[in-house]
Amino acid sequence: MGGCGEGAAIDPFQYHNEVANSMPEAVFIFTFGPVQSFISEARRTSDLFTGSSILVELAKAAGEAIKAHGEVIYPASLGADVPNIVVGIVPDAEVGDTARTAKEALLDRWHRIAQTARAKLTTLQPTPDQLWQEIWDRQLNRLWEIYWTASSKQDYKPAYQEARDALDATKRVRVFLPAEEAGIKDSLSGCRSAMRTGSMDATDYWRRIGQNPGITAAKLRPDGRERLDAIGAIKRFSDLAGREDFPSTSTVASQPFLEKARPHLADYRDALQPLRLHKARPQHADWPYDGDLLFRETLTPGRLQSSYGVQRPAQQLLESARLALQKLCDQIGERPSPYYGVIALDGDSMGERISNCLNEGDPRQTHRDLSHKLARFAAQVPSVVDTHRGARVVYNGGDDVLALAPLSTAFELARQLAEAFHSTTGGSASAGLAVVHHLYPLGAALRAARAAEKQAKQIDGKAAVCVHVLRRSGEAVEMCSPWRAVDNTLSDVVRLFQEDRTGTAVSSRLAYDVRQAGYGLPQADQKAKAELKRLVSRHRNEKHPHVPSSEDLAERLFQWAQLLPPGTSKSGDPLSSIEELGQWLVFARFVAQGGRE
Image (cartoon, rainbow, N blue to C red; front, top):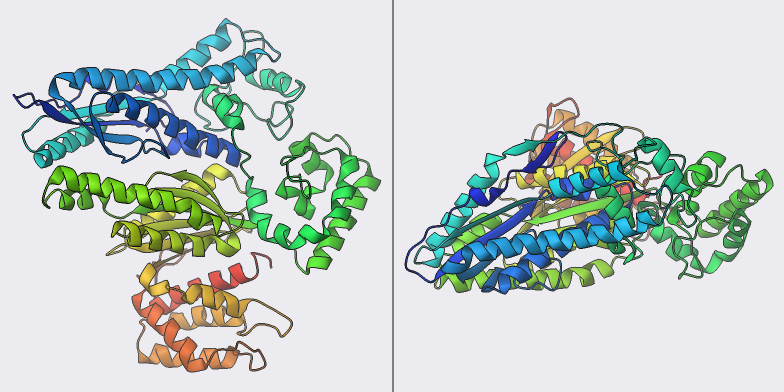
């Protein structure tokens, strides 16, 4: 929903299912969108976080309005991250009023958020004019698609099912008004007209905005190279945009290196000072800069100009900074990993779970109980994420979590979130993990994570994970596994591939040899098991203190291979389970080396 060329839906209040009878209560369901496209239209992680925060604010506003008329069944709490669907019980006679007030509350909150961005932009030059205001109003008023349904059938179960079926049918109608978005398009969606005035086009307008005092290159790419529509401007300039110091993808990727480097940062920090670079995290005295300055490729005239607005930095200062960074890396014994992970985790078969709980005892109470379980899981998510330094939650809506994490911890964090979901709610969750370079377009990274999540949901029995590795060289690798198959094995293999002063416990060549062997091993049988044992024996480092026995490691890999779903090669050909195991081992090697070749 909300793709290129689409306008807002015709008022869906004419498409609802309200079954009136003598019962005083009705099951009421309210939802709005677009969600995924709204979140994914982001260049910076702060855009991503602000977009998610806006969605939560709108859902809370609608939820509070519904609560004023009756009881909110789902979500259990309106105090945390609220999903974009709210289920409640309201008086049958107040269904229309509930829908109206919920819609008005949502739109009122949206316009108040937007007004804070407009007020900020109005203080900058150029001053908005009539054309600017027309674009602003059109885009604000055409964005949200709001749907509601209600059923007052006598029992909760048939009432909920009827309302839910009607909601699904309503959303499938997809009746849209035509939308004309002329001129240069915005940089985030590529669909809508970028803001401009009657006297200058979008490139000129945003070039001038970028020249205002206080508008750094980190805030807005200079020289008109970034052009925002009304929606992007709200994400970038509203009051919500400044509520939290959300780390960039570069900061997330480099966090493990930064933790090791903290005792040695002074010389490099001092070398950066004369360049007068923007301090993204001024409250962190030991390292107030963005993580991208821990990568040597940032210390070039082109990158410093595009990312920091520094015009022709003195070569002597630049070389001094490079030498200080090299010294820092030598002291740590490594360079920062340029890769990080985007985790998209979602509860499996939630519609089926709700249907099942409605068959047990008091359907209304069991639905309420499930909502409380999801709320308890959501309350646990921050503590689970906090155990992984550098990881951050973007969105946490009960059965739906979006998070960023360094490469070294991303997979383990996804696994622990899935375990927490199962132990708290009794159901399973599947995850998609996109592993991408810190300079990879953020919107594309989000789409890759969602595509991996969708792929995991297609595995029989679910409770699975799919990983999409998008290497900067252009090579893309995909692999899937049930959680019960991977267990702790991947983390253990990563440790075997990590190098210390005695080398690696197992040669990294094992990964490629297993993948190569899979070409002639169509299934995980005893022949494959024997070959795995031979390869492990061949690649063990007998001098390493943590070298595993050939039998134990081969057995664990064999058991994993037996449970792997069929894979697909880049050419579309099916992969044997041993080839798929080889893909996982190649990924383990990649993680062990921090994505560095």
